[in-house]
Image (cartoon, rainbow, N blue to C red; front, side, top):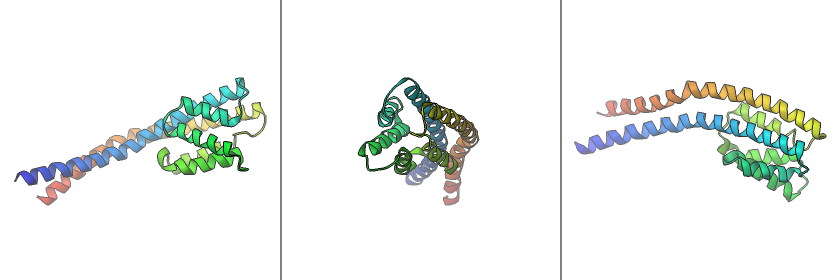
Length: 173
């Protein structure tokens, strides 16, 4: 009898854990988009007030923004320092491809990040600042949508995990 109870508890716990991990994806999307907004602010400040080269700017951003977003900027800076004939946008796309799983973003959000690569190193300082400001606005919209999805789906996944586990236990008994 105690083995059945232990099995039931483990099933419920595993299903609840699955639901929590699914809800964490929505939380992480919001965090990543917030970090990207901060990164663009740092980029704008570095471009506006500093005379650093783009790889140095990326390493500066990576030092101030932790997690997968910081890793994305670190990797892009590393690609740029390799000097294998890639443009800044190509280095950005390669880094995005390397870090896609860690970023946990939806397809549309990843496409937005790919477009972000078009602003790196293109045009003069004013053009880059304008493009960064435009990209910030697009990221704010994506952040607003991600927060809505998070609010809608976070609790749902946790409850579905718990109720799914309970349902499986009832069906097995």
